[in-house]
Image 1 (cartoon, rainbow, N blue to C red):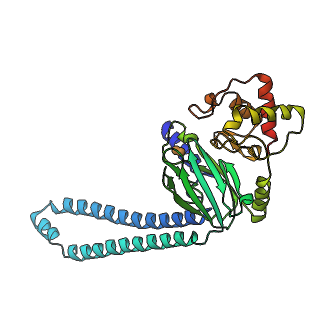
Image 2: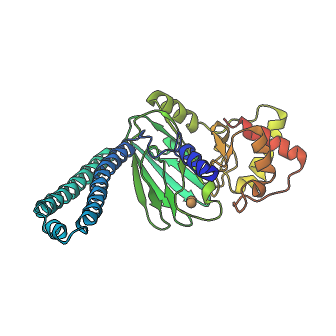
Image 3: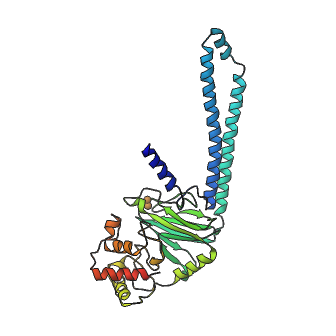
Length: 333
Ligand code: CUA
């Protein structure tokens, strides 16, 4: 009983809020929720009719076996044939109805993505998301990681790629899943209807840290999105004090710079998350840890103990270097 209660509460809490396929905050997800309700009602009605027919049949059989006469009477019941005809028609109408509902849901989802006004490319890696906002003007391209900002009511086209294995892009509150496959380009359409903070999650097992491959999603007003976008276009903030300067020197000239990019600095690596505005994000390590000083210390000092198997090595930093790096990273708003 206790275990049952625990499972129930787990389901209720894990299905609520920021990661909820029944949230309906995106046009596609709202369509799915409606279609699910239609299927649920039709299938429940059918199930109840079948169950009732079964109960009636058992009951009649018991009555009938009392006398031979009764049995003859029941087996040739005049009501059997019309009941079967009605049942067959009901099944046909139900199936055709579900087919039509599915068709219109599909058409509606296709229409949502037909005129995108925002284009981004999401590339999956073990175990993080590389995010690039596309633009024909190279100076307007924004690159970030493990987060997506979307203006509410604006249809966005998301091009999906993978650098290693198969992953799956899934923001339950907004839309269904789409696989990211190495060597192939797939896409997804997002049309957020309500502002809010949501959580995307890789939905295809992709290695030991599959569960810790999340995506912070912010749906905001167009004005807030434009402010965020303008800030992201800026180069990384220069160090403002001697401690940050020491961190800047370490990050941009030592191990970190060969993998990470920080625009406006010598750090130009592209195989790990872009750090230009790292401190403006809600989490670190692809949603594995909330963004705060304690977690930042833990992550920089020993990433392998925080998220075993990830591709960031544990360098073995001296204490003064660790303090300086954290101070500099915290300033990268
Ligand atoms: Cu990426 Cu699971």
